[in-house]
Amino acid sequence: MLVNRSIFAGLFVLILERFLQIITAIYANHLISNALPIEQFGIWQYAFTLTNILMSLTWMCGSESVVPQLSRLSLHKKLVYCNTIFFARLSISSLVALSSIILALTAKNEIVSYYLLFSSITILVREPLMVGFAKWQSEGKLYLSGIIQIFGCIIRIFTLYYLFIIIGFNLKFLSLPWVLEGIFVAIIMYCCSIRTLPKIKLLHFNELIILLKRSVFIWGGVIAYTLFIKIDRFLLKDNISSIDYSIYSAASQINENTISITLILIQVLAPILLYRNRNWNVFNRNLIILSVTMFIVFLLFSISLKPFTPFIFTFIFGNDYITSSYYYNILVFLLPFLAVDNLINAANLASKSYYYFTLKWCIIFLVFLVIYSTLKIFSITTPIFSIFISLYASLFLSILISTYWYLTITKKHLMEQERIND
Image 1: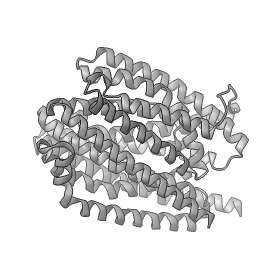
Image 2 (image 1 turned 180 degrees about the horizontal axis):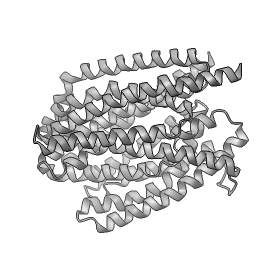
Image 3 (image 1 turned 135 degrees about the horizontal axis):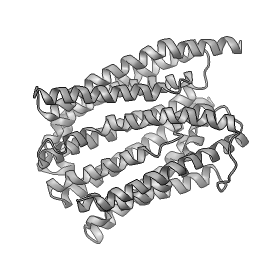
Image 4 (image 1 turned 90 degrees about the vertical axis):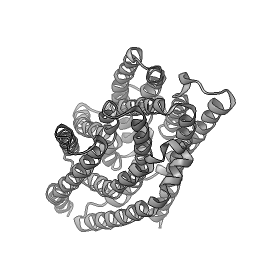
């Protein structure tokens, strides 16, 4: 009963939080697309995407690599573990923030320059302080982080309203709503979850090496995955007109927001229904049920949304962006496949194969680039449709790799652990 309540509470709060994230993202796109000429809207999308990629570089010791271990530790050992994660992340985020400042100072476009400059503050502080998120996830308490992020969404909404409605539009402050939200969420989450100031009290050397070994491999995979999701806007920037780029970017941005729903569901369900079960039959049954359920739900969502997308994009962005709905209707069917793939990825992390995540996503990212480059060189189709073909083909390969690994390496590991425990 307690587990069911935990699942329900986590799902309710985090789906509400994700819904608000999507609403605030839509509201931001609405305000900015109306404030900027269509050509400059694409430049802002480029700056926004570049900032997110830089942010992914700070995800050292991410939840994917530390949650399975944290979920099995005592409270005291868990705090020492989190303290180590804090300093590991801080060392990386400092370098990335410096890189963001350098890129900002050398950028030729004013929008890109100011956006990267202010975002460097969030890049520096957010991820180290978000170690509390990993702690709560390991305890099945993501609903607590969801509540904090809901307040962060409210801050973003009011900041957007103040900047665009009250004082008027200013290019210099385009990143301010996200900066304030990121800093607020990170500080409050750290204070509520960890409740102590960072101390130079780290894990023993052997444990530290194991943590870094696992984290570095998964960290590389997270970066490759982020590039896979976002690289389309970099590849298309100089290959289509600025107007077409803005129209496509609008569709890609909304699709990315809906994709994040799958990750939230997995963050809630994996620690409770997967990582706590070491029995292969139970683990496998839960994974199959979750995979089938998520695929059907997101497929139905994609189908049911299709008739309404022209109205949605016109309402959000204006009549100039109606073509975005056509692109979105193609991109949105990635959703059920990404949901299944990400769920199998979460299951494979239980095998402690540290290199799996990075190896797989580096392969998928390279396959994507090869397919896109081949289509472009031989002019088989337009650049945008080359992106679509590359995304679907590489994603199907990703599912095959994930499934193969699960049925061989992960299954073997879990059955061995089951025999040891018996």
